Image (tube, rainbow, N blue to C red; front, side, top):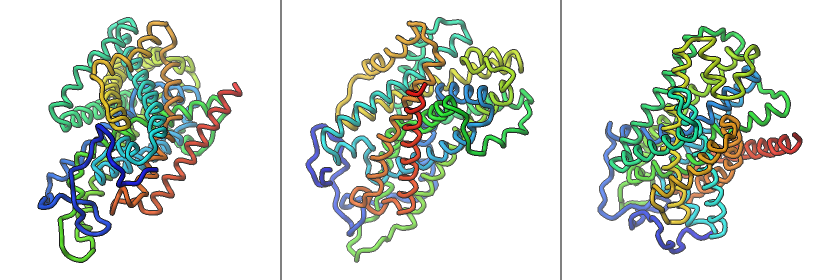
Length: 450
């Protein structure tokens, strides 16, 4: 691991030139004024987690949650809730890393690790972005097919084109992009919750899903898919980039006095805003996922097992059992999920390449490269829902490669300064890492056994 004082590589995005205010504190530009804490701070800090949360309710989540509910009832609800708690911890650490350092996780990996390690991390991160884009584009194409009868490959092209239209909004201000994603998340929850309440399905047996347990290799594979769809590795990279521009809020005032921490109330308040942002956004995303699994468990299990075969079959089952409005709400929610998710995926792809390599390529070229596998899958006639589930299983293998560097960096005082993790936080993050790796091993064993 390279020392923190190692020279920057070409193209590196460095924080402003600074001087140290006092030992153990973050650096601060001489003469720079301390940002005032007022109501605008909460407005500034609330929002990045909602962009990240959109990735937790993408079409891959639709596929895995509906298949899990229709096949096993509420059995895997505990997996979903646990994965959402894990996501909260990881997104909090990622957001804190960006605020404390002014850099994203990929940028810090580039400055802290050997070049061979950085290239390996970049390659797997790009694979994660491609699998993510596959899920978003395929899901959006399915929604357009259900709503308007478009061929799947044409629907995929339309989703990709719309994502290119949405991207310039980020260029006109990150805040607008954050608000747009928050609105999309709220729409998703409203559509699906209305669908569930309108169904009038009995919810008495749902509590059984809170008891940990699995049922055979298929449930293990679906559990891995739920974890991969919920703990999205590409937004672990993205969230740190979203908060890195709030870096100046974390700097203490310059002082010539003795070593001390005069800004501890500021730090506590900033951390509270970050935690609130993550908690609210992840709870909304978790609610969307729970509604998806619960609706499938109560409506489709065990009487309508064919609803687990595809999203199209689930759409037809909703229309047959609940009514055409429920089917319409499901298709619209799937479309919103695909469009919002692919926009976030494009953003994450830019962060990954710009951070790990210090280089960028034109947005149109990146869009064409990452969309090609999805369009190829749709044009070849491969099962779109099966492709969604497989993509989420692949994503679960990318989690440790984002999670381990995140924990290593946030526990390093030389990187984080006074924002370094508490020991209990680090231990909890390592425990999460161990569980995720163990789940991946079990998933591999199950796949090869089958």
